[in-house]
Length: 140
Image (cartoon, rainbow, N blue to C red):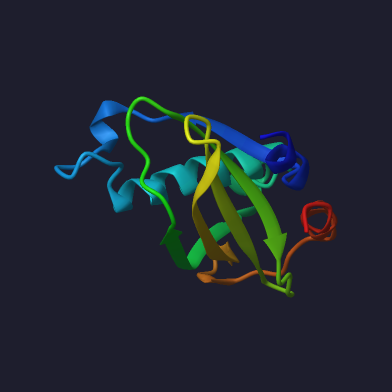
């Protein structure tokens, strides 16, 4: 676990709920995208990405997301979702998620999402601000 945390400067703890499981008695595949969302919003809050959304109208949207399941997770368990950033471009970047099961002491799922900055007032893409660019580069 210490190695996992050392590799991810931002990580989010999540309790697996009984309702996350499906008829096959493991966490349903769709739930991982909620876990990714929780980690993504935690990451955005920690780098203050959403702070100016109301005043600027600019915020992140997903253009694509993916998950690869390596091991099933079951209740009761606690997971940690680590986040890293790559492929930073003028208007977008990629977030990588790694899910670590505390009960199994193993990585169970990996995923990624392409995130595009979007101006909700104009309906068009928006460039990363210098501050956001600097914050993202700290988590590559």
